[in-house]
Length: 380
Ligand SMILES: *Cc1c(COP(=O)(O)O)cnc(C)c1O
Image (cartoon, rainbow, N blue to C red; front, side, top):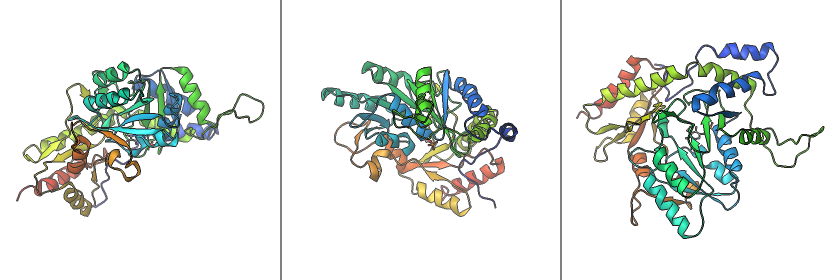
C-alpha cells in the first residue's frame, strides 16, 4: 500500500499555468509578477490590506518582531503549545521567550496570559510583544486575549501559519493583532513548496519588511547598507505555485473539515477518544484532525502512532510544548493552573494527543481503514 502522509502537498492543477507565465516572461528571478499578485490576492482573504511574501513563516515572525523593535533582553510572550517556528525568532533577536499555557480550547489561555502580565507588571517591566498561535487551524479567543494585551498596551502578532481560511466570530484568521503571519510550508493548508507571508494593514510596515527581506539595500546607485538585511523573499516560481493553490483554498478547508467530521462520527462510540474541542464561534480549517485519548486508557498515543506506522500510515504526536523543550528549559512558563503544581493544559494535550492523518489526497476508504484500525485497539 502507498504511504498515507499526515498532510502532504495537494496540487490544485492550476499551478503550472502561473509557473509557465514566469518562464514565458523569463521572470524566474528576482521577484516578479507572481509575487506581487500572490500578495494582493492573498492579503484580503486573511482580512488585511498588505502582505509581504517571504521564504518561510519563521522569517515572517522574525521580521514582525523586528518591526515591533524587539531586541536584546526584551521579553516576548508566546503560546507554549506550538511549533518551534513560532518562537525561534525571539532568540534570533536575543530576546527572551516567556511561554503561556493553553486552556480547554488548546489555544492560549486568557487566564494564564493575565497571570503573566501581572507578574511582569509587578516587576515594572512588560513584554515587547505577544505571539498568539491559532493551533491546528483553530482561532484563538481574540476577544479575550486582545483585550488583555490592549490593557497593557502590548502589540500582538497572530501566528496563523495553520489557520489560513479559518474564522473567529466571522472575521478571518490573519486579521488579528498588529501583524500576522502565514506559512506555506509543504504540510500546510496551501503550499508554495516552502514560504510564508507577513500581513499588516500598515503599508509602511510591509515596505520596511520587504526592505529588510532584500538585504536592506539603501536607495543609492551602488549597493549601500545602513542596516543589516536578510535574504528572505519568496521566489516568483514559488509564488506561482501559491497563486494556483489559492484557487483551491476553500475546497481544501471543506475537505479538511469533512475529514475531521468523519473521525468524529467514526469514534463517536469510543468513550476514551475525544476529538479536539472547537468552540462555536471558531470556524476552523481543521488543518490537522487532532484527538486525545483518555488518560486512564491502556491505549497510549504512541501505541496508535506505532500501529498506524506499521500500516504505512503517518500519525504524529501533538506539538511538544515549548516550555518542555530542552532548548527552552530555562524559559519562564505561566500555567492555567495555580499554585506550585507543574500541571498544564499544554502538557496534558501533549501526553494524551494524536495528530491523525489529515491528507486531503486521502480517499474515504483509506480514512475508514484508519478509523477501523484505531477503534480496534479499544475493543478488548
Ligand atoms: C509551520 C509553522 C510555522 C513556521 O512556518 P515555516 O514556513 O515552516 O517557517 C510557524 N508557526 C506555526 C504554528 C506553524 O505551524
